[in-house]
Length: 136
Length: 136
DNA sequence: TATTACCCTATCGGCTTAGTAGATTAATTG
DNA sequence: CAATTAATCTACTAAGCCGATAGGGTAATA
Image 1: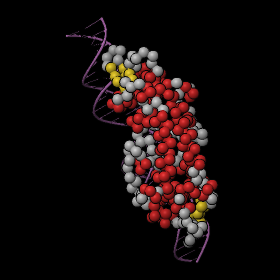
Image 2: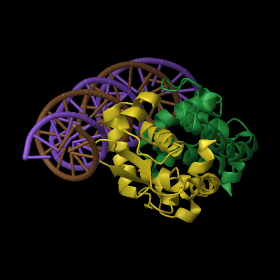
Image 3: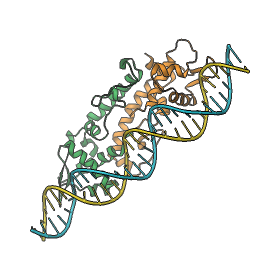
Image 4: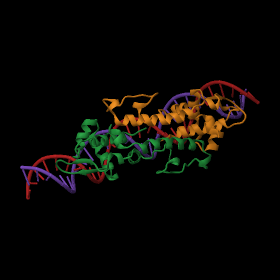
């Protein structure tokens, strides 16, 4: 399941990227327009800022703005920051690997192979889709 | 995330499908061999039985056995029974569709389109992989 | 210097997951 | 028939996560 966190984050990023001018967008503006709890959205945008996708400006006329070019914001990186691993199971995750405690031998595991396939196909989509593709 | 339920279920199915003879396999045998809590595995196998993939026999020499041919057990159906929707988000699910409460217009949603792509690529894998492929 | 709006910490209810316990039912075997 | 075996059913629980909320703190701008 895609968490609301990720869903809201993607919607917010899209909203910001759609701005003609490069003026900062306020949290409350996005929250209202996209039907998202303002306080919750706050924490999400903060996460995206720490990740380096967004920048922020305080005070009057402040808000959040895009730091990178939408073409350079890959879905794979956004997904990893907000959702966590792209793989369905830790033992096939590239960035969040963890050994299964019930599997003595990964290579002999029937589930393992299947999950690698799924991971690769998802990864291909997320790597080849950028924020710019979402704007359309 | 793939739930342990699904993971255990797949492992159990593989275990049963690997049996040379078609004699029923007992829960405890699978549980020990695959390091799964016996009682938990019980409920999983019961679910698979209700779905029509497995049959069971009580009493001495009883256990669970495969009803269908491994080639006819598609991963997509097993996934749906154990894991639920294959889609990452209900609004793009084919079998478990639900409207988003925050989206006024699905077709205008940037997340929607992305999630359809992911669903389709996963579905293709799950549809084209059967239990027979896992045995190898 | 007042206002605006980001920043941080803490908390909470509700839900799901994984696992446990115990009693019951049905089939086989002696 | 009786004893054994193993599936079936019901109920419960501990732990963890998610989404949301509350309230105050801090920095920049006009």
